[in-house]
Image: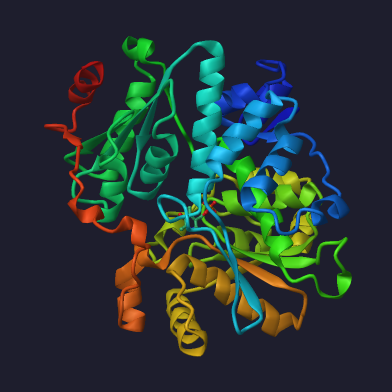
Length: 447
Ligand SMILES: *Cc1c(COP(=O)(O)O)cnc(C)c1O
């Protein structure tokens, strides 16, 4: 796979400094490109729709094996890639039709009940494989306000050659999130910081620059890592293969609209990558809450980063989405091309909550606030355009993770899946720092 760099590091690479081509391996181990840019494949292999149509009825793990072999086949030994892909795609993503004629792709059946499990589990496994091949080890440092840390902790749990250290602000993550990070043990160490998320972030950033910690081989599992992004293309193919065949017949895939709840735009970018590989996505709906940087850009042509505003769909409260430059590059940095392929929607809190209530009253289906933003965009798109092609909307989190919002809107809290029974009683193994000074954290790390 040939890579290019988009965003801040691009000029530097084009000027010749650090201009040697980076491989996918380096992109995974480095995370960010030199100069702060983002890696992106410079071309995509195509997957003919007629070939993909032959995979109908396959479980998602089999589709993942085939899509990722096409993308990464020249980077890894085939049997090894296949084994780690199967291991990463260990849970299903069912497509559930609602009475509105819209299908909900449930991406929340992984260990942390959110779609980030797909990217985190795959990244953990390729990271481990790359280190093992070099006879190397690394310590992944993550600062979290809750969700990213739990996805990385669960995604990297048990991977050989890797230690994970997750820092979270004491008392400021939900009990469920804390249980996901701090009850694992093994290669995952959770650290409770007596401060706020920004303190955790500062400790991690300082540690990355501290040469006295070189022997730990500190690394990050950043959300912009290409190894987290590519596996997310898989479920778009999986969704299309689950859409009823219709008149098009069994040897083709139906042209489909995808509605994607957006934050840092990784999910949407992965969808466009699938489209570049041949997925017949007719259009993407970029569904944002009031943090609507992308919809505003599509309207005005002006990119305006801003402080984020807190909403019920809090994983989408992003004021400067990190994957924007990738998304633009995939459209040749053309506003016209972006407008043709992406329709922006801003869904405010009242509409999000009304969508949760109305959908439940009409159909009995329960959506979390993130999924509801995507669903609201899908309803509006259909009403505005009359487009009668299939619509798939992505549900990114299990409703039980947002019990308090659902109690307010529906009068009850959805239950967690049965396998989570008893999570409250598992012992919290987190170690607590006595204060937020860097020296304290460094001594702990050197342990
Ligand atoms: C991270 C997240 C999003 C936003 O996804 P991006 O890839 O950052 O756009 C949406 N919903 C949930 C539940 C998330 O955790």
